[in-house]
Length: 248
Image 1 (tube, rainbow, N blue to C red):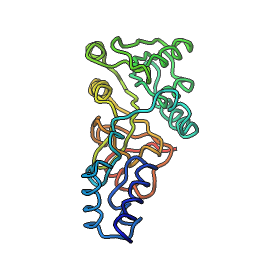
Image 2: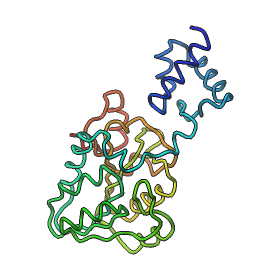
Image 3: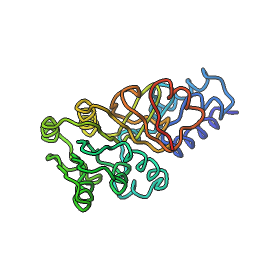
């Protein structure tokens, strides 16, 4: 295969998936690892992609995040499976942190535990919780317009007033080496602090997030329990070695 043909296929795969692994390109193109590495270096020099550990991403792709409306209609069935399993982990009388995001939002209709107190940084979440007569606290701070998540230094200060039995966090990426990641460093700070203030942390991720890597790291896989509807067989063993998995 000619070099320019490989380049075209690499960019095409990146446009389809956003992030691509080195081994995936080796298998796709039938070229050696050293050849693919040289291709990625050249394409990065042309400002067509950005190399990351073990692969490549489209420029700026890792720091872009879809809005709440867009995410609401993606992988709906998978998110509901994950949300239902996560809600079962809440026990009567617990104080929990519920992260902003569509998968954690989907948990709310399934919460059956009694006398639960919820702290959240999601505007849509607190509205749904109140309508279900669940005792709720909304963090103060700066509101992200497209995700309706409260972030920033004021939100972090608010968060320090609480301690949680459990927290439930969304993520945009689950990777064995890179851990849990999200596009926005400001939102990552909130998620990380909630994790630190919780007795137990659950990360909710449908299978489309597994193998993905985005810009800001939350923490390592071993620091939380992963709830997902399905783990790809290619990743199951390596992820299971790092963390407990609750799978639908």
